[in-house]
Length: 217
Image 1 (tube, rainbow, N blue to C red):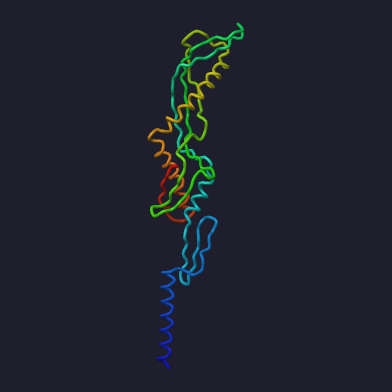
Image 2: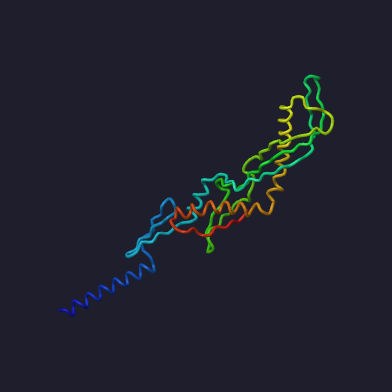
């Protein structure tokens, strides 16, 4: 009788060992339960495993940023500008050439509106496909000083300075493509976006986030 009892106990232990090995190696036969944040819980006979759908987590995070500013470039410039100066007292318009010193700020970053980016995962980590950095706001232009070079004179100084600023604005905008081609724009922008995303992903997942790299359309 004792021998029979020992045999039954051994068979039960052996079955448990086989079950543990099967479920540890092959996972549970039950489908994983997916959460809205991209995490999934897969329950086996012996162990419970949590997996992260990094693509879902990353898409959710990026979707909250319609425009993401990565850097602001401030440039001081000087140019000679022709301007028509109104002279209300004389009832006519005076032509003048003015040397203008102005300050322009360029806000640069990524547009992350729906459909403007894609997310994928490969053996090396997460891949974000998106457009190159661009202006995310109209350049801000501020006049610093001016000198009248040729004829004409300022009568209504406040109004004419406003006109000067309006004339300089499109000139600053026209410089944007050359500024965006600077060699440091993409590396600085990628670092800013990566540094923003990595801790957020890690916090949501409760573990270290995969490496992120960027591909441009």
